[in-house]
Length: 475
Image (cartoon, rainbow, N blue to C red):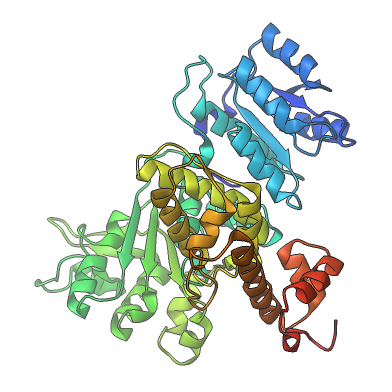
């Protein structure tokens, strides 16, 4: 996961992390990596030793290796019970997403991916301080409860987060492309937050669709100019703007442009010039040339290349916008993120609907991780909202999911008159059929996507009477 760091995380006060690794072969390697980040580390090889260390001195964070051979979840619960003000984070492998989800359920507030870099380690510590400051007074819940959390356990999203950090560091203009519901705006906000060390840089959002051209021009560049061009603008051909426009108000911060392809060509040309020249004449009581220190980010669907090719998006504007291009993967391509994303969204939905916190059973998480999700995270959020509003129990079970879930293509929910066994069989059959179709009948790839062994998938295909026509000749 990636969240914005706290500016105080690198302050002068030394921080000590307790690293608990019960039987993991990488204990020494992780402890050494943590020490290399400049953090002080004390290690414990079992939960008893960890509790003794916590009782003897205040520690900024307890990091528990989720790959431990014993029970890291029990260790989380024990530490949470005896030291409720000590923030706990889990060290996880992307190949075990369910373990990461269970750690959050057990009481961990954050996750640190393995392998990690210095920024990721210090960010987790900063998040721990946000949740539970040094004075020991708790101020909030899990970091995962924050709406501005970019979850990245999968290799595809880890690549995205690397580009996000690069964009934040360089303040280059960014093109973010992806399907609807993949979190393009969240990626843009994360870039802004990571680069906003002072906490007071503006974040301005403008939708370029819907309004008449003159209204869009007014919002972007300011009020219509009725006076003749200023002398400064006449001398060097610089464009004129006013202080009311988004481009001026975003100076020093970020301007996010949505639906840029819908912008009229004349306005695209003007915007391209301003982004190229990085300066404008501001018309007020005294005309002056000002620098346009703005990080411009634009979000697009997956057809942005076609829009440039057919002229709907000017190539000179695209060149100015896309100094860095980030292609956000669909949820189908980042299945390792689904368990933790589901937990994160479920916490948000419970809070938004003012209901007691609910949890997902392990079988529900496994099924959610296998569904097609053509609507991406938005579709997942809609389903979880329905479950939160419909289920009174604290744990959402498989039969609850079967009643409300729809497969790709709008399949109706399972009829309530059928038995649970019939419902599960139908759901499994349709889910396996959808995954096989998506992978062109290649069983090894479908089995990997479903998180089961290939031999088990063949067995289920036979037992559930999945159409043999879905299978590829190359198995």
